[in-house]
Length: 184
Image (tube, rainbow, N blue to C red):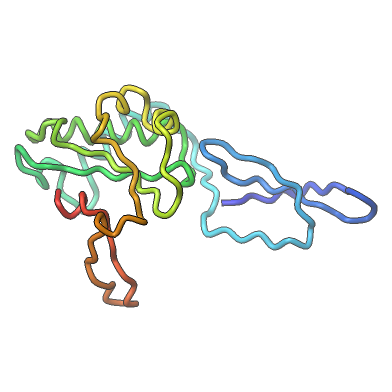
């Protein structure tokens, strides 16, 4: 998601530039681009006010999901579960990943799923794998420490880890997922 301001600056003679704000990890960077640049974005900037209690809002949403059963109805005690989360290239606000994952873990525990039977996988697609410090910034050091070798990044270049689920009915797009997802 890029955001263009109307602010124009001049550089080197008469070339006009525009400031463009681009997501970068958990923050943004500002770039000066020629005003002839066309910036495309498929994500609209959110304009909702921040929640006063993010943890409470996430837990309330999990306790009353819209159009789906609660997590506890989807798992059985002793189940093996894989939780996928997006990487740092997907813009998010504040500590949403760690808050949501912790709330989901609590829901799973309430349904009889042991935390040692849960794996966390970063859905980084073809992006590089995150370093431990980057995972700690996304999830919190406590989850990184707790999950240890049950916290990993997707490796799209390892065919042994990819399961082909076929194609979408509407457009024939291939559907391929990490083996941990299908094995859970």
